[in-house]
Image (cartoon, rainbow over all chains, first blue to last red; front, side, top):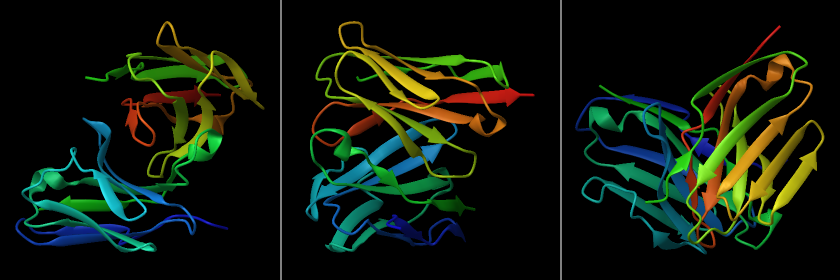
Length: 116
Length: 109
């Protein structure tokens, strides 16, 4: 069945290292979202794309975070350099981007990141 | 800002009914979603409201009042597997969702 996939599922790294997270949206979905979830802040939108074009990245720290969609089947979120405060679960979600119930966002399993 | 408020925690007994409330700012409202998230897992879609009234889906129902900026999720015949966090999310333009911090529901036998 169709689902969003994310890799890696878990990542432990040291402060200052680069982290790259990948997401494969559901085939046919034209919107892709990156979220970060922590106990304190809950689920926060970092960036989102429609038809591979970035529409909003206002939730993303610009100096260290970058998000791209090299093609329709791959979205990436990079952190360089990583810091301990970046430790969180990062979710990717995709959607059809249509009006009505079809606009539901479907979440991937997440990448659990720990920066030491 | 676009604050979304929901209780942090709730408890209930198996077989009972529980109502989880959510309030939000009404300006620019374009739909409200409820998601369920079990510990360590991804959020999964439960319901969607864009018009006032009640949407029923089996044991789960969701209500919306746009004028009051208010929604609730009603869970009937609670089961142990319903122990999870319930996230209220509001859409303020075409695609962007703003999530509340979630309500952690614990169901006891």
